[in-house]
Image (cartoon, rainbow, N blue to C red; front, side, top):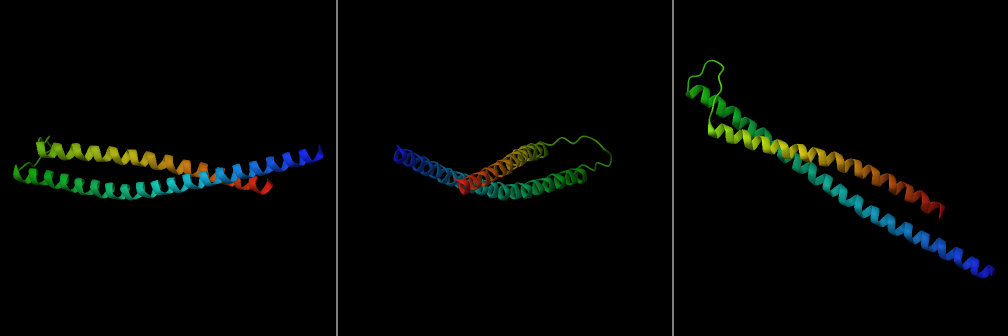
Length: 128
């Protein structure tokens, strides 16, 4: 009977240890994936920031050209299809930027959660 108990204890410890190792590998892979996605989002965010800056400059220049072209010296609403198209495109890009910001903060929180899980699994592995 003692032999069976010892065997079952060893088998349980071995299975538990293997499960921890496999779960640690899974978490490491997930963590690398999240870090790669965060890197992509940061690069994409920088590109979109530059695009927003460029479109803002184009829009400002269009307004200045319109003011000079039509000799406008007082505040009034300027209607121009080209300006409206630039404003629409700028709004779409700014919405994309906001989605990236949201996704980035979500991924950073997920990374912190997974890092905490990795620490817990590492501590459990030391005990097991």
